[in-house]
Length: 287
Image (cartoon, rainbow, N blue to C red; front, side, top):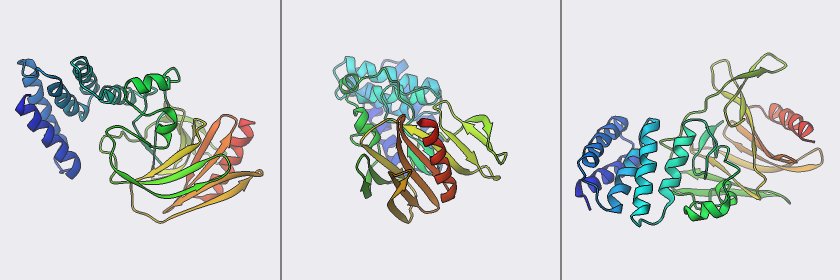
C-alpha cells in the first residue's frame, strides 16, 4: 500500500466530515499530489487505486470523475471488493452532463428536497447487483445507498398504494450540483417555466428562488423525502379526485405525492393551493 495515497485519502475524508472553508482548494492540491504519484508508478495494489479514485471522485470537472471511474475499474480488476465506487463514479460523470444515470446513487436538490435524477431504463437490477449498488426500489427509498452520508427516518406515512419516509440527512450533500435548466414555456400568469434535461419543471420567484416544481418518479412502493435543513414537519393524507395522496409539509415547503398512470408525481411548492392546482392538472394530463 502506498502510504502517501492513504494519507491523502484520510485527509479527504476528514475534510468531507468537517467541511473547511478552503475545502475546494485542498481538494485540488490533493488531486495534484495523486496525479504525481500515479504518473510515477506509485500505485501498485488495488487499495492504492481506490484511494486515488475517491480523491478524484471529489473533483470539480468531467475529467476528474472519469478518472475516478477508470481508477475504480482498475481496482476491481485487481480484485477489490465491493465494486460500487466505479458505479458511483460513472453516475457522477453522467450527472454532471445532465444525462440519465446508469445506476443511481446521486441526488439533486429540488425545492429543498433531494431527488434521484432520471435513470437509464436499460439498466437492470441484475446489473446493479453485479456492481453492488441498490435495486431500483431501494434507490428511491434511499435504502443501501453507497458512499452516502448518514441519515435518520423522522416520520413515515402510508396509504393503500404508497409509503413515504421523511429522512433527515446529516448535512447537505457536498458534491450535489445545483438545480439548473432552461425556459421551456410560460404559465397562464406569464411566469417562466424552467426544465432540466431530466424533464423536471419548476417556476421561480421574482428573486430567482424555487417557488413551484413538479417531477415524475418511477412507480415504486416506497419513497424517501430527503431534507437537510432543520425544520418543522407534518404529514397527512388528503383526497384528490377520490384518490388518497400524501402531503408533506416541511417548514414553508409543501410536497404532494400523487400516483398516476405514468408513475408518481411529486409536486413541491410554497403555496398549498398552487400545489393542489398543479396536481389536478397533472392528473388530468395523465389520464
